[in-house]
Length: 85
Image (cartoon, rainbow, N blue to C red; front, top):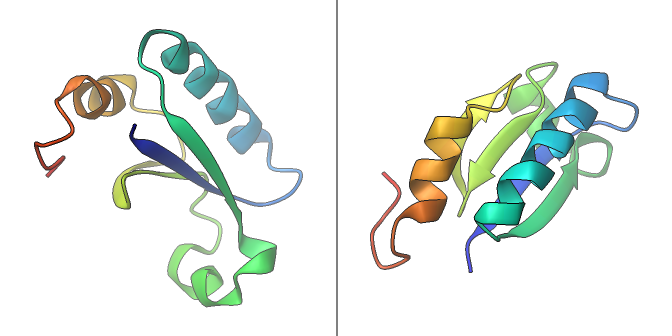
């Protein structure tokens, strides 16, 4: 099963919207969800700052700020033996 990671901050409205969209995607394309909070990972603050949410599938960044449904679905629908990028 693929892992979708959302890099977020506590109280982030755009992140909440992204999680809602990911819930809908997950109904058809199941995945494991991992939440990574910037507050808990100071090393990521310099890399992402306010460019959140960041969505990664199997550790590969797919989108920032908004869910790009087509890009995420393309990866989730592909056989796991195929590298996402």
